[in-house]
Length: 226
Image (cartoon, rainbow, N blue to C red; front, side, top):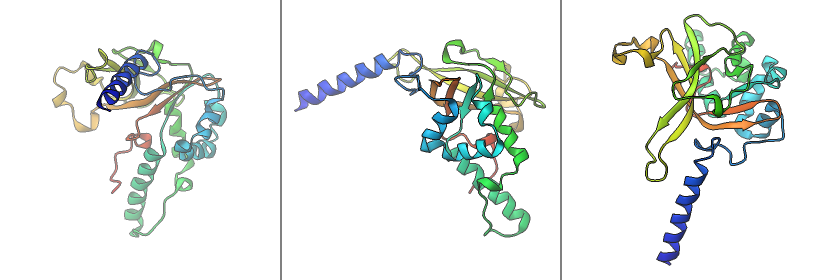
């Protein structure tokens, strides 16, 4: 029994090592990156994006993400944490902690920020580097803010593979923190926000989908959600 178990473990390690060499699978991406659906239909087919799809519908952005685009998708967890934070803010404003705050409570003008997750070109893993590069989203120019897409290399899995590259989406506030000699001196409000992608390079019939880490809160919100 022990020999069989050892054989199974070794086989699993070999499988992991092989799969990690595929460009689209190193950060937990799909083993087959192609899905025979549009970006919108792909998101709608996955329950984990149900809240996001409702917001896309409210914002009237279905056609926008179904162009030749790259879309960074926020999971339900990230949307739910945003709703909790917004409820706390509204409860304080009204002096009533028993209010409700739902997807329909988000003002339409705020949903325009969903465009910061849409890029009017196909940005797959093959064009990203560890240095990163700046891209403009469909939202357009933002005051004192830019978006940097790239790869973050980790050697934490050295037992199995030499390294793993995670796709990253970074909200650069002011200057690029990677170019600062003493990062500890950066004011807290200007620290860049880096989000890792948990599944990358999903190829739809019209573009590319990258799924953001479940800990990413919608719109990079940092208000109290407790």
